[in-house]
Image 1 (cartoon, one colour):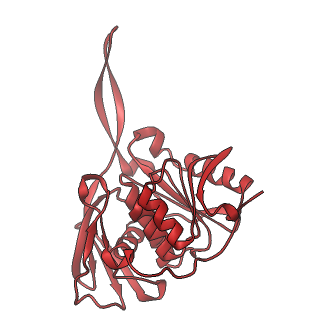
Image 2: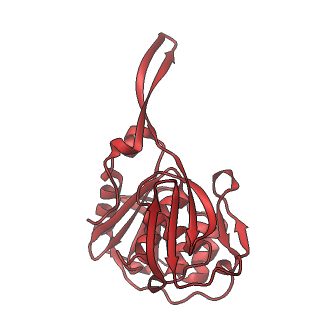
Image 3: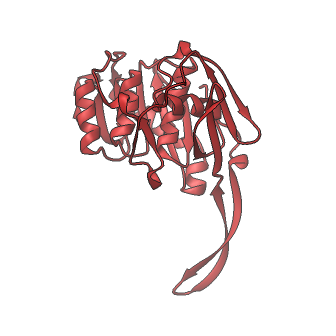
Length: 261
């Protein structure tokens, strides 16, 4: 499996905590996820910034700019450079002279943004595929078992992509949007194609579903729930939307025909 993850020890720090119960108190060492600020630049023009888990930053930079409406397809991306001073520099064959009109999303703290043009207009045909129920079970189990960061910190969201019968990439971040952006970035950097299924531990709000559908992913799954607008966008795009995903069950809110036995 191709991923951009690094050793989990570089993504956590140890902290002494005081555990208090009715029986008394004691000290315990806990692992805390690292959250770092990064600015994202396109052709040397700063577009925005985000707090991220500092891993798979090339993918995050490309995926972030997709959500902002600047990058639309893999062939536009020429190079991504992660600078040590907390900057992700993306160079692409696109125009940055006109700022994009953006919509504040449901991201924590109201910091998430997507371009307004992503919300409007018809959707391109999705990259069609199906997935079997045994594949879904393997997909979910492998995703949840892939990294120790979740059990160690209880502070990260995960997002994986299933294609050609196996888990191709899996990314984590302190933000559910960032984890999805990393998968979208992997598509833009040519590591995978949209023809597959995406699984996230975060809820499927409008912006989460919108970005997946706009890049062409036909099957969108979550461990948790969709919002009304997330469902409406899945219906507009014709995407399969599955929630409460477990190895032994799915709640399919739209287009169940892509889930086969």
